[in-house]
Structures are given as structure tokens and as C-alpha cells.
Image 1 (cartoon, each protein chain N blue to C red):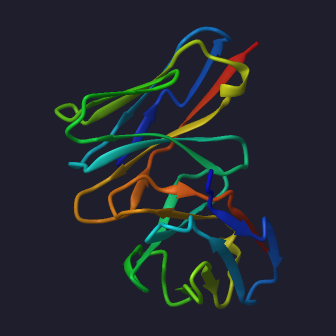
Image 2: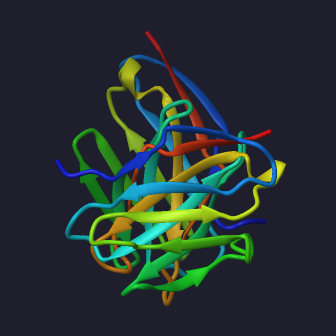
Image 3: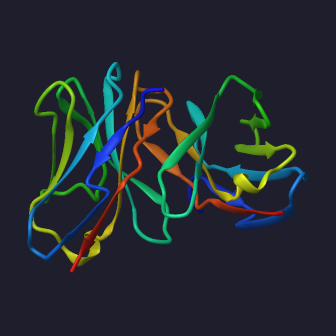
Amino acid sequence: SQQGEEDPQALSIQEGENATMNCSYKTSINNLQWYRQNSGRGLVHLILIRSNEREKHSGRLRVTLDTSKKSSSLLITASRAADTASYFCATLNFGNEKLTFGTGTRLTIIP
Amino acid sequence: EPEVTQTPSHQVTQMGQEVILRCVPISNHLYFYWYRQILGQKVEFLVSFYNNEISEKSEIFDDQFSVERPDGSNFTLKIRSTKLEDSAMYFCASSKQGADTQYFGPGTRLTVL
């Protein structure tokens, strides 16, 4: 298995519902970052959670981190059509500076 | 809000040609990165750059690749002799500190024919 695997690979929900995406990783991390990517476009940073944190909020986003299970989740509440995008988790290990990205979850919000 | 910019947005080149991809990181950032994403695949780390030298590089970043910060604002990625498999979206990123949020540019789509 690879560092940073998101699940599900694809998710379709109705506008207004909540969307939950999960990320698992293999090694100890310094922090974990979530990004959004609209089709063929750049990566937009959403939120960073450090290894000593368990939960963070930013607007409609809630991120949790469970280092004992080596997993993180991203919750988007009250989804909007504009949330349609691919969402990636990326881990940063101690002692280096490279982000290791997961495979992404493709989220589709149905109006 | 400051952002990372990249030029060109799309570059088409012939196999064997040299290309230079350009980036302007966020002005008070000290760490700079290049990543690439082959169509339909994961985003992959290429190289990180700090204090005017490479601090880390991946196996992908072989002798055909080089990076440079020619002045106080630009950060470039050069591919000396492009191959078909270099076709990808190339992202530049920057961060204030090493283990910090990395802010990405919009990318340069490189197509090698």
C-alpha cells in the first residue's frame, strides 16, 4: 500500500448534504494537509493539521486526525455545487519537506 | 491575497528540446518546490529548494532536471532534453518554513510531442 490513500475514490451527494472523505497513511507524520483540485486546475490548500492535533475547523470544513490509526477525515458540511472537485490528502514526514499525495476522492455535488 | 504564479500555462515542445518553466513564489516564503502530475495520476514531488540550494529531490529528478533562483523573485525548472514521458502538469509551490503549509501555483501543462 502507498502513503496517502483516500477513500472513497468517488462520491456523489445531493447539494446540502455533508460529504466525508477519508485518508490513510503508513508512516509517522509531522502534519497532514488537505487540498482541492478542480478539473485540470491548480491545487488549493484547504487545511493543515499537525500530528499533535486531533481536530481542526475552517468554515464548513472539519478535519480530524487519528495518529494511532494513521488516518484522517475531511468533512464538508452543507455541500454546494461549487464544492465539486477532487480532494487530496498529503502527508509531510518529520525530517523532510516533501508532501506525499494520495490518490484523491472525486466529489460531485448534485444540484 | 498573495499567490504563487506560473508561466506559461501551457507549453508544447518537441522531444529532445529544452524547456524552462517559470514560477514566482509568494514573496516572503523561503522554501520552494516543484511537483508534477501526470494525467490521471498522483501528484509527485520532484525537488525542494532552500537557501539557494536543493534540499531534497526525488528519483524522478535526474540529471535532465535542474532548478534555479536567478533573482529575488523567480524560481525555474529546466528540463534539458524532454522525453514523451515528461508530459505532465508541473506545479510550483512555496512555504514560509519547511514543515508548513505549501501554497501551489496554477500549474504549467507541458506537452512533449
